[in-house]
Length: 433
Ligand code: 5AD
Ligand code: SF4
Image (cartoon, rainbow, N blue to C red; front, side, top):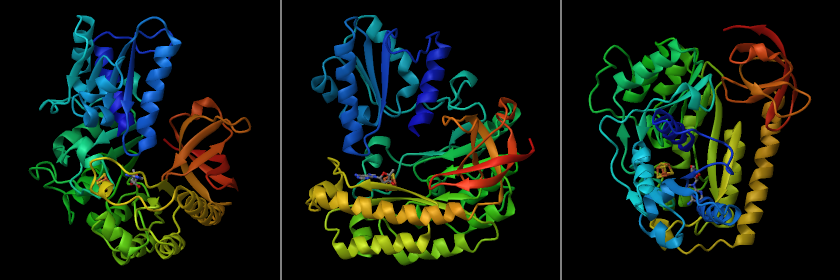
């Protein structure tokens, strides 16, 4: 979501004749798009602003955008006097107005207001993170209030974009030659537009599965979606994936813990049994669907037994990939009232143990791709020396292989010849679109 926000901020600035530069030294204005999901991310902001102030004698305009801006608001100016303006998560469309105010001499400009009703979600060709892949926001905000999470406070309540707008957006990207769209939102499967407009012709048990079928009908080569919320994950989503080749065979379904006690304290709204039921459906679907997740370790009151439940859960689910986080207390969340009573050392140990368990499982899963053929969207030149190109499968695995730059943006058949824990390696067989 943050990368998507940055693309739109850059689009607005470009249209107002600002010039984007990756060269910090020559920049007159430095913008920080911030994350506040864990404390570390927030600290990074203060460190970076300090560096900017120290490194350059020339005064640069410094703007803070995103979640930290939304949460801290006015207090950011006190915390760091070199900040010139603060723009909240929904105010990013007004970035040029903020800069103009500062240029006109107003020293501290703050806007943490609502999004414009006619906010433009599109991204200029020149500002996209990839020429072949586009993010398409479908829902913003979150109503779930998991006890550890700051997102409902930083991004506000769930608001779904109208389906006709989303479908028009995907059609346009398709016409422009984009190969893959990522439907994004904090909880995509909680998608609930105000009206059923645009979805009338599509089957589906929920508005989200109707939307998936509607987006699939645009004919775009690939559709991925993230993040899904377990409680609202209707199995019709799996049906939709089975029916439509262009709905990619990847589901990101954050579980957070394997212990019912901890899930209850986290107020996740699902038990581990509910979660396993969904996993069983995913694993036995017609198409092989890859499964990824997020797990928090060291949540308050997580005992050794609870942690062992998380290890068992990881073994049961056989995730293709897993993001593991150490619990980080966030001011303003309900869990902030709980005692952060798992020691730093314990968190470190549990993190290492869980990571190792996942690594072993993942190694086995990745190995099962050996000698198989996968379709890869060629995204970029590889950062590693031996292999020239890199891309991702429909199941979202990174694949590296040798090939000419002419393959960039194409979907190619790759035979897998080698596997590591996080990457597959192979050789090109055929080129498709
Ligand atoms: N501490 C640690 N991890 C967190 N996440 C969200 N809030 C916290 C927190 N306070 C993790 C969750 C979520 C992912 C995006 O970040 O696992 O799914
Ligand atoms: Fe945070 Fe829970 Fe909402 Fe995800 S569902 S954004 S973890 S509150």
